[in-house]
Length: 113
Length: 113
Image (cartoon, rainbow over all chains, first blue to last red; front, side, top):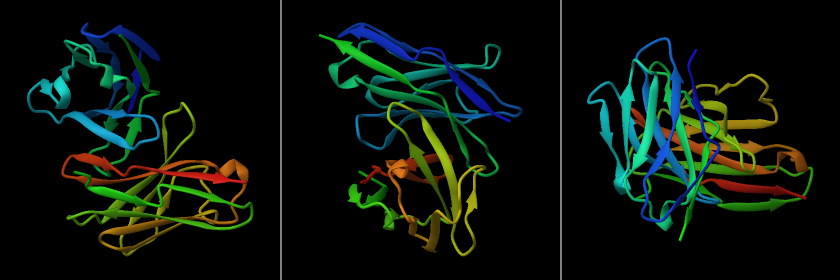
């Protein structure tokens, strides 16, 4: 069985400051991990993915995540938050055999001006 | 640009009626698609896996007679909510895999009066 735990339900940052969203995973095999973003009443947009290549993954909109096997973590970061980053973020693990996704509970990001 | 579309984006119906939601893959073929349900301020819950040319597979607790899935072609899956009730009101999202990642449709907001 596989699962992800997002450690923060809500993160609030000031515009221009760094953002850190924490995610720990549990998987019985080498996982594929993803971060998705969802703006209000919208579908999910893929930010980045880890599929056993480089452990530091760069995504869209300045986001990146680092896969740390020893810590079973896949934290998402951005050096400078923008107002448009306010959204819901989901850490997701994928079953490599059937593509089924297991979602974290989500982290709501608010950005203060 | 979007790789998965959904139609309609929003639907309001009366209790007891049936509603069909379409999910289309754009410019690629999808033998498998997934249907999710999302409650307000909650994460996504996988409802079922839609398989082209065969029966859908439903997650535990999801009524297959209530949520009919048809994967009629390699680019189209439909979800029909039969005899809808107010508790079926939700945000329904589909996804399709491309290589190692899932791409999501924009979602359909269903409101049952």
